[in-house]
Amino acid sequence: YAQGVRFKIASYTCGAYTTAMREAHKAKEHSQKEHERLYAEAVARHLIRDWSGLDEGPYDYAQAIQFCTDPEYKHVRAWVEAVSTETAKYLTSARAEAGKA
Image (cartoon, rainbow, N blue to C red; front, side):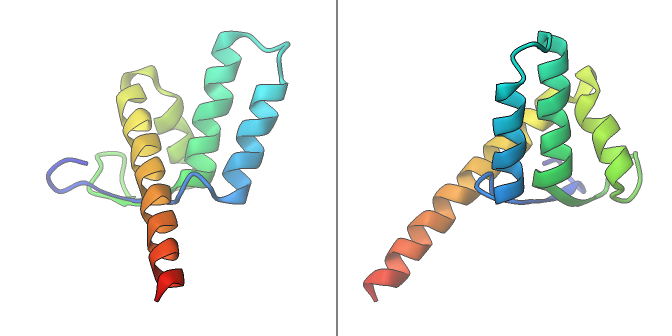
């Protein structure tokens, strides 16, 4: 992400993340703020697997929740989601190529 900062990010196609997102979409009675919190928690719980080099210290699930729900770091959460999407595209492409061999 930045010099000296590293994230280990899962593909957004992982089953737990897609289930969490589906559940968040179903919760229509929630406010926009509550939806944002649910999405942030899904990213923290299912996409961010590890990090290093952050001022927050070593990866910790509770810290990841705080990090992802803090509006100041919304851009980082968006970056994690984008990398997760790119990872999924790469894996899909690699699997398709392996199937041709």
